[in-house]
Amino acid sequence: MITPRVLLEDTYATYPHSNGYYDEGRRVALGRADGTEEIIGVRWDGEGGPEVLLSAEFFASESDQVVEPWTEGSPQCSVPWFDIALQAQTMVCARGGALFQVELSAATPTPRVAYRVAEGWKLDGLTSVSADGRTALISESREGEHRALLLDLEGGGAKEILRHPWHANHFHVAPADESWVGYSHEGASTSVDDRMWAWHPQHAPSGRQVVDQRQVSDTPGVAVAIGHERWKFHDVGAVVIAYGESPAGPRGVYETYVDGRAPRLVSPGDRDWHCGISRDGSAIIVDTTGSALTRGRGWSDAGRASSIVLIDALTGQRRLLAETGFIAHPYHPHPSFVPDGTAVVFNHVEFDGDGGVRRRGAAVLQLD
Image (cartoon, rainbow, N blue to C red; front, side):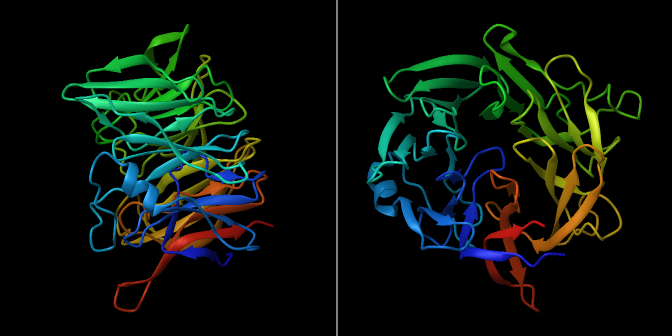
């Protein structure tokens, strides 16, 4: 196994279906989780010092809503999540009823408010930005309604693209073809049987289900419980987890598509939790509910342990990279590959002998 190197203590990497890398992949953006809300950039190879990308002062001055910061003693509080354009280094962050934008390639990056939530609606904390940095994707909700909007970051203006009466979230632009948008029917994984959805202006203007969870099941009439999908960079579709808690199998990591191909079980697993995929599609990274070395499935005997596991996307072969721990969001491991695929960044938690948190922060594993 590989010993993880903590990049910066009391920080966290962004949500698994978002991009946190910039400066041609050399730097990674991290949120602070020590009672102060701030987004900081660091070299994941350990060179140089950190730089502030979105300051605590900016968050405090521009948020329309009072937001209590996350602390270990207040784990019910949310944190700022963020996404960075794959090509343009535009970062967006939804927080406090506003969408913030900052151009990280500028000589002096200066954040601005790109959008404020519509009256009567609540802005979701997860957002997405197109590869060229010109368009942001957000979602809003009010009682009985959930909608997605495309924002023009250059000219202004917002366009609603879809609306559902159920909890739709986890919207993110499909990197392989940005005319597709992936999203989720949120809810308990063992009761929601239509988790994965996609929108396209011609092929799915009202949205459509991507995976028939009963069709892939090995138990007639019982749906496989899936979630934590991450849309792929090299092919239109996503990798998704069939959880250990699923009442039916096969469980593990699947590759899914929007062109009619059936979902493919890449690698069976009884404890897979979150997943990421390399830019070329050759490798998948997962974390687990409980150590991968522990017998059982799902949350059985999981404790607060998790493993970081590398999977060959072609053969399904697994390699255990490291052991870590987890506490409440944002400190689920949430592993992702750096853009060139040579390392994995994840949220690392270590416990002391009494079960208290000894150390936490975003960490990196350099791959062979």
